[in-house]
Image 1: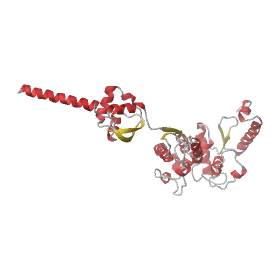
Image 2 (image 1 turned 120 degrees about the vertical axis):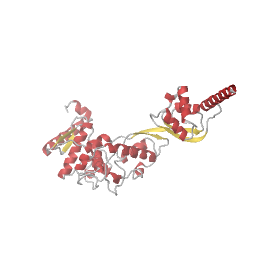
Image 3 (image 1 turned 90 degrees about the vertical axis):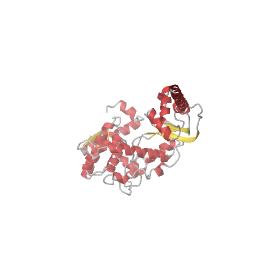
Image 4 (image 1 turned 135 degrees about the vertical axis):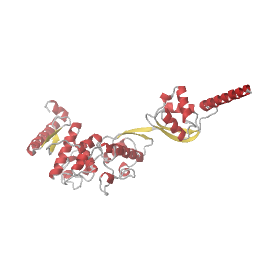
Length: 351
């Protein structure tokens, strides 16, 4: 009797081992069937990847997938990204595919901070991306501008389209790019402390406007908070902002402005319209937004490009000093033209 029990136990143990080995190595499993798109997040553990594949029906067990990856030594070879896989794949087939890298073609697009929707549209056309970015960024169910203090009549998503580098499937769908940009905005903007701006009766949308202005006006990061302080001071004093960048946005002329441009009746023209423009004039990054929310504490109300300053700005509270700097700048531009460029002129002149 004891021998029969022992024999039965041995048979049961052998059966369990055989079942386990068959479940683990799947000698009768094929390459799967059908088609399923799977996203493997960056930094995901083998257990997490197994759970994703099991939920998507790619494999039958996340546990055995993890065990197979560990036994085969391939757990460190799995690469994040998007894959086209099959339902009912063997663990070996799934691991081989995940080790070969994403098999959905992608395009890498970098949206530079401080670019307007119009400028991004031109960039996308140059990159061969089809579609109308201006139309795609009028509105979206993914973001409500009024949540951030924008009026219900806000005409576009200018200011909310987060500049970053994006990996997009070929062929690029503008709806996917816009969705990624708005998602990044919703992730990043809450990191900004708006308490100081709110104490000055400014909304989050106002901060975005200021950030977009200083993105255009200041080339160096250290100048961003000081440029923001000029805007705060001018708003407090009831002065027109008088920024050429808003004229460029209003007219679409990002080159040398003409008298006609400067006299544009557009409400975005802050040389003849008081206060902030109706919307941001570009899409700023977190650095510019933080500077707009936390300006330097100064009495500056003027700034101008420093002659031979490699993009640096000069700041002052004196109109007479500003006029003197303006004359210096205009003279430098005239002389530089004769020297075939500012670089040649600046070689013989100290900043």
